[in-house]
Length: 430
Image (tube, rainbow, N blue to C red; front, top):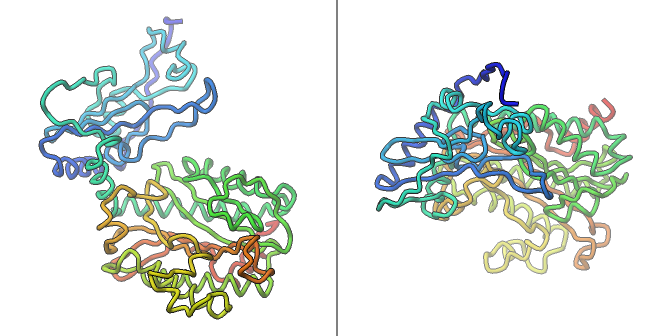
């Protein structure tokens, strides 16, 4: 088994992120000039017995190195960086043909240390040579050190042009996944939420790396459960279906888009009234996104529209202005969640940044955030008329902060009720 194997190098071109990652590491090192910084990629996680989940590297590790192989550790020290990686095994080792997790004959061909180095522009050593570091220098591990994790996330708040391109591509592929689902509407009606989930996943795997998060395919009253990921229900005529889905691209940047569709292709008058309210709230939220505006501006603008809409529907026990008082927020019974979060390599990006920067800080050109107001009337909510119960509506888009305002990266999918109906009419069965 160890003899008679020819040489077969992998064609691994230089990664477009290589130079960018080098500059990112320099900024990270500047924040901790006297410390050793350790950023592990992580390893496989068991799904069941001897089967693992598909590996996805730690975000910070990949952001600062470009590496997506498992069991690697990036070390930044004294202005220099070394990537300790697990390259492919030599053919004269048992690992080559016996190891179920790393052996080439079991798990596929990993790049060599030199191939990784050439691709990412960083020195690469075998992970078995990772030092134990018994010196006096402070060693910070991004998985355990809160300060390092905070700075690593803060450096990702503003996206560069390459990252924006990656997010745009993820949004474009996501739009195709939504179209795929509507084109399969006959199957959707036959098999329910599962068919939409599977259809979208096929597009995500065909053109990207994976889905960025578990898809929410929520028919009828399932839409009032914010994180409905079971996707086991039916899709019934006369109802709405809420689809919250996003493709993760090959470089791990993810889209996050939600549309609420009428199963029949046309909204009922009540559905249209509620949908138009949510869409007006989203429009107000998007219009509030601009450089220098508070991150929470989109939420506040959207909630103002929602509260006044609920007042017009005579659902609020107080006036809309009273409900909007931070001491009240009684309208939140039917909105439940915030309107925005940062977006990037994580669907809820930069979550460990200092609160005074996010969510309490201001928007800066190059930030990308979602704007996603919703209305949710639970099946057993006795404070609303019976005809509202079991209806959930959310509309979500991915918004780039530009120098003069914003750009909707997911604008290729329709948002108004009329445009949604026209879009469904074109694609159902198409």
